[in-house]
Image: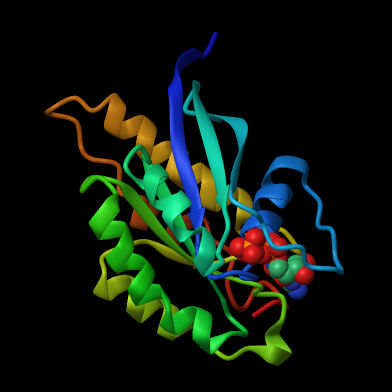
Amino acid sequence: KPRCSRFRSTILVGDSGVGKTSLLVQFDQGKFIPGSFSATVGIGFTNKVVTVDDVKVKLQIWDTAGQERFRSVTHAYYRDAHALLLLYDITSRTSFDNIRAWLTEIHEYAQSDVVIMLLGNKADMSSDRAIRRDEGERLAKEHSVPFMETSAKTGVNVELAFTAVAKDLKHRAAQHPNEPKFQIHEYIESQKEKSGCCSYF
Ligand SMILES: Nc1nc2c(ncn2[C@@H]2O[C@H](COP(=O)(O)OP(=O)(O)OP(=O)(O)O)[C@@H](O)[C@H]2O)c(=O)[nH]1
């Protein structure tokens, strides 16, 4: 029987419209609701249990509002975050350029050992792509954070993003001093779907 652990707080952050709510809905319910975009007001959460290596990791996933006027609300939650998924939209140069500012905020308000992952969302929209994948990879490398492109619409890499975070958090909690550290970068590289196999990129 899998052992249980306490809730791990994971926060979705990034500009308004990058797809934070859609990513969470895809992960939670396996669906995408197209059409009208209603911006998140304030903050809300969804609990999800992810089983990694026979251990249940309970993720409390917070969906924040990307709009500037809600920023002070979300800052208060950073301090208690175990992980932060930072999203940009591959069709929006502005959302990508703002990643540096998001990282500055994260370093200001979050704990220094928080797990950070960079996600380039809307990977299905290849004809409107404004940011090449290698630009995302380079930015992630610069900040030593794992990176992948996702699509809340098709579901590509969505499960992986949350599973990788859950695995990393589980390993950190159960780390024995003489055990090798969990390598989140290597795990993601071995699991993620990318060009060649799929039509999205
Ligand atoms: N094609 C495509 N559209 C997406 C994807 N993710 C989100 N969208 C669309 O982008 C718009 C914004 O998505 P949301 O999930 O509401 O964005 P958000 O980041 O939560 O926005 P705020 O709540 O304002 O911070 C919606 O119209 C979504 O349907 C995706 O992966 N592919």
